[in-house]
Amino acid sequence: MSSLIEIIKDGIRSICNKTSAKFAYWVVPAIIAMILWYLNWIIPASTSSDVISGIGLFAGLMFTLLFVITGNYKARKSKLNNSKNEEDVKYLQRYFAFAEQSISLISYSIVKAGAIIIISIIYRLFDSETTSNIAKIILSSLLFINWWQFVIILIKILSEMYAMLYDDINK
Image 1 (tube, rainbow, N blue to C red):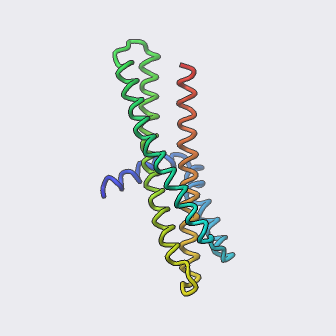
Image 2: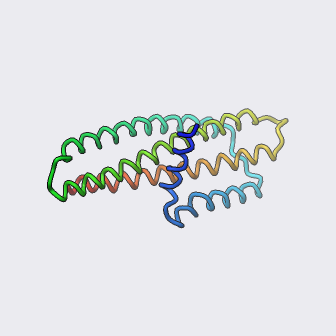
Image 3: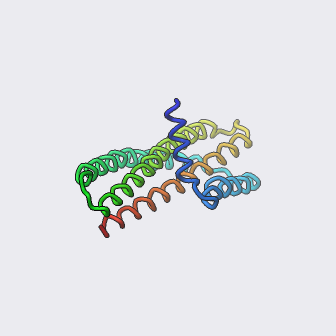
């Protein structure tokens, strides 16, 4: 359980390193969720099952990406570790920073995907005429906030990968 908490802490720290990122990650989805709550908007249950499929697919891809990044770092380290060239040393340091942040973000995205799947399953269980509208709205808001945050995580991972790949091309 403590490693799960560490993954969450590291992931949030990697995403929320700037005030604008904190605002986009925490405040914007909460405001939108409150507006949707006020409007009594509820996510359709069929959308929830589609999201479970999509999120599960992304989580699997992200899990594979963890091993690719780790393997690439080890290969680069063994190749450049004994180099005396300052450019190689700086490149290896940049790649290590990239790998470290990417592993935090990808691990966190997998945890976030699991949370979305669990909330979606609970949401599907509450999808009946006897369930109070308040419960549906709360779960719908939780789903929306977590979806938004998941998309932010994916954008952050993509931007980190883009920067490192661009650096690789120019090396």
